[in-house]
Length: 257
Image 1: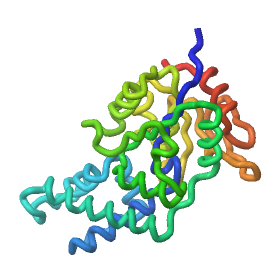
Image 2: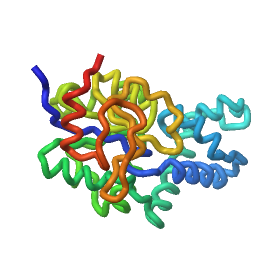
Image 3: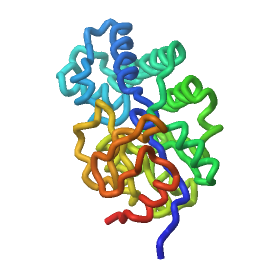
């Protein structure tokens, strides 16, 4: 017996909005404020995005570059301070200019809510970053739009581990078979798949070279009237844009091995 689609589970960075380069700028500004000569170029940040979580990303860079001897003995506390400063700078950047939502995002969320689908945020980014995006790009609080917001270190292991998806499914009382995840990266895809979910991927300039084997479909974006999306991988083209009817058909047509 087929299980009907009940909920959409959204990643944030790169999925709802192209925030990644704002994050990169905030990291660089935090490093400068701390008196460090670290500069993450676009190419470097592209590589670092393979590591999920801000503090984890900084630690990976420190270890990769052999920088531990130059830093305080309590590395965890030092990295936490750097990351807190980066988060503050990111929120200020969002406040100053905001980041446009990706094509089709607001349209689809409004339609899904109107048609009774349950909505959740499933992200490894810091809760303050989520709030900043919604306040300055959606014009409201994330809780006004989503039933559940799972963000940051709410679970011990970040994507590509499935922990945060399993947490959301448990909190919402849903099975993986009743949901569809929307992601933009290989790590996000792996996390959702490991939790048993079907996954729609929309790529961005930081993830368009990722291996998305196992995704139900891969698109350049969700599309809008006058701004059609394009099928990059998969067998079910959405037409000019993704709507709830398409998501229901995609969910029904796909199986998770």
